[in-house]
Amino acid sequence: MMIRILILLLPFFFMLSSAEELKVISDTFKGDQQKGISIFTGHVKVTKGSDELNASKVTIYTDKDNKPVKYFAEGDVSFYILTEKQEKYKGKSQTAIYLPEEGEYQFFTKVDLLRLDDFRRVKGDKVIVNTVKGSASAESANNEPVVMTFTLEDKKSKPKSAAK
Image (cartoon, rainbow, N blue to C red; front, top):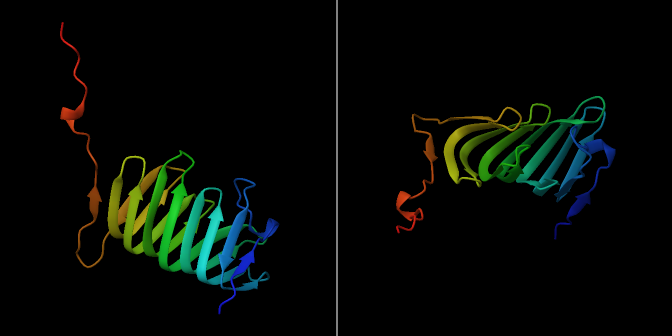
């Protein structure tokens, strides 16, 4: 039976922009503070505020001040993100990178990203979302198309004004 490890890394893993707690739950943990690397493996769940990241393995890189500069998630990645502009995203991929200083999420391989606010869905092999600039891009591999789906309002469902 695998013992689940709950690690609350106090000031070591606070994000730059706020004092919200970063919580990592995993089966195993290995870290090297000198190198600024923390590796979490097995059923990894990372939460900060309302954001959530799940993966088989997550590596967190920190700078000399022990502030996270890069998150690298791999293996059946799933996520929920609330941006600074209050946009909500959820999705999955095989690999994900988060760069907190840039506010940028990079998703790779079998990406399925859904913006919950307007149900825009993007499928591809490389999708980048910048939460600070409000920009996004997508690419696909092997000459396959990037697929973007929009949910459109039906004009017939608009209420009609009453005629007198």
